[in-house]
Image (tube, rainbow, N blue to C red; front, side, top):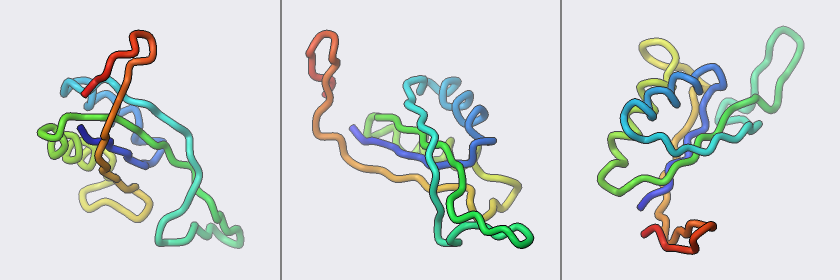
Length: 108
């Protein structure tokens, strides 16, 4: 199992969530986050925004589903044909153990 964490623009979240659900991946945790990437914030006129609002989507998927989920997120989180700075980032990490709290059963 793998954990997929995607940090994306807030205005793209509903589209990404809808497409994930339609593709059979309904289990997602969504967190409001603030941060910046390599661009180190944004300057609009005389105002500099050091931290930019984003959304982080977290999900655990089977190893064989990783490529499909990553492609789906990238396709639907990208702005425009080529994408733009600030569209986000996807992180993949292994999940060694998972438990359902109510039953105590192991998920892996």
